[in-house]
Amino acid sequence: MGKVIVLGGGAAGLMCALTAAKRGRQVLLLEKSNKIGKKILMSGGGRCNFTNYSIEPENFLSANPHFCKSALKRYTQWDFIQLVEQHGIDYEERKHQQLFCKDSAKQILAMLQSECELAGVAIWSHCEINSITALQSSSDTLHDRYQLKLSKGKSEPKESHTLSCESLVVATGALSIPSLGGSGMGYDIARQFSLKLTERRAGLAPFMFSDSFKAVCERLTGLSTEVEVSCNGQQFSESLLFTHRGISGPAILQISSFWNPGDLISLNLLPGMEADQWLCKVKLTKGKSLLKTVLQQKLSKALVAELQQLWWPTQAETSIAEFTDQQLKTIGRQLNKWLLKPSATEGYRTAEVTLGGVDTDGISSKTMEAIHQPGLFFIGEVLDVSGHLGGFNFQWAWSSGYAAGQYT
Image 1 (cartoon, rainbow, N blue to C red):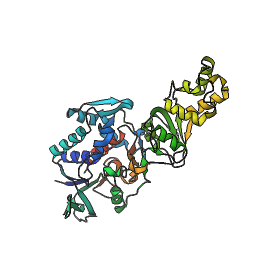
Image 2 (cartoon, rainbow, N blue to C red):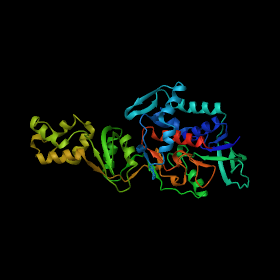
Image 3 (cartoon, helix red, strand yellow):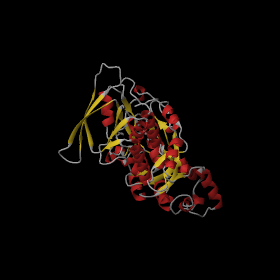
């Protein structure tokens, strides 16, 4: 019976462990924190957006956009949905075909734990890996390829263990949300075995501002509005949320993955309409109205008050009939294309994913095994594959975990 050690008890690690164990492998999963699945439990506001009805390679970012195709094809969203249904978990579809638990994310974690138990996976928490060594062997038969030295336990003195395995799976996640166990350990292991890394940065993260717009955000904190946001040829239509640091919400998290420091982002506050033409028509039919009164039909009172201060402060009490067509067109175009310059994202502290990671050129897209390092596998977020918001990162965890589990 071949021995498999999985490093990391998140979505990808659990899926890989149960898949390998179902094939008759002897599997030990090592988790550094006090419990497995922390990111699963907090995801989707505690409801876990576990996949999406529409999973396409275009929903993923990677230096090699083709890398994800094989795994996604072999373990699809329908496969995971079937598992969810087998466990009697009620789920619901929300906008953009996102699937969430109706009750609690705890059900997804309980399902994975149950599958692991049934397959005979051993799980150890509170594990600190001290060293990993590749073992040399002249034998052509299956043999242990890696030795791990680790410390285990909640408090000092910790137990010391030396373990060996034939297959070692790195499912350690990445740098995002360190409070939930995010770390760069997987990158250290990749470097140790001469695998290349692509540049890493925070993705799906809120924006911050250091200019005068920061004060606007502070005053509007908690307010949400539907927008169309664009940057670098990418565009998303979703809600925006003002925060005391800047802006967040699904639309902003999505576009942050395509933004680079120094870039402008464009906000369309009235998606689906030509605001300049609309305002000129209103001038003809409701000329006595104030501009803010007209805009409050479409946007919140508080937001309109801020826009008035920015764009027509001296004409606050001027009827719309007294605005020139050119003035209205200028304001209308700003409503459709409000250009803002974030100072930064909030970084890994709140980022939902890490963009970049272990370079996929060194990994088999079929097996997730390092091409020049037999028995070493990388799955999930540690790889240079990141999904859009909406269940795509979980699907990558399930698909890549399953792929590796078939070959460990």
